[in-house]
Image: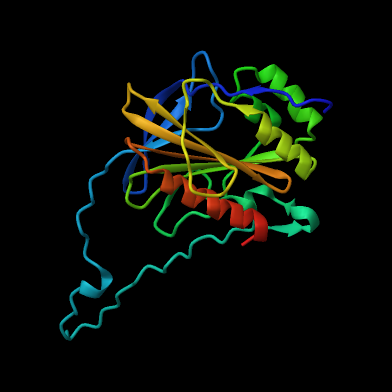
Length: 254
């Protein structure tokens, strides 16, 4: 690129769809109408705590009986092990499946959709921007290689955290994308304690009484966006924590 382009981010114009994730209730934003939002913004809602169920240790011990009986215990099904792999190369280049580098989900978190996350094409990324045609061209100029996203609800059902990664042809091109990101004027700038240089904004939807904190930064050839969505006011420290963890994962692959 001979000059830095200005990218206009489309404000989230969303509809709301109630879905279930395990035993926790969740509300996920689905893009529609004038602006497009290929990256789902999600918001947690309080959910009822399920009634306690008897644990296996609390089951009654059978009394001796003249008739021999056999109790069949269902086998425990192990959680599927991810086969997605990746590694960090020289110059902080990222090799393998980009989903490998997505922010890890806490042990008590509930993933929405595929546990490994989803891959994103150029059109998916451009669809998040009001000037999508121009953005498609810019992505091509910057050597866009692909994207990945994953959405999870925190164990306390307070927040949804949506991570999106975008990989470019070089670290310098990733930096250009980060620098070119220009949010709309009605997004309020928010200060996060770290990482240094990251940008953060608050987007409040008064019709649903939900707030999205959006953080953006880059590491090597990857730009990462993290959305933390919940009821106002969302503490910027929650976003900063996720930004730092994502930065570490892109730096070390761990």
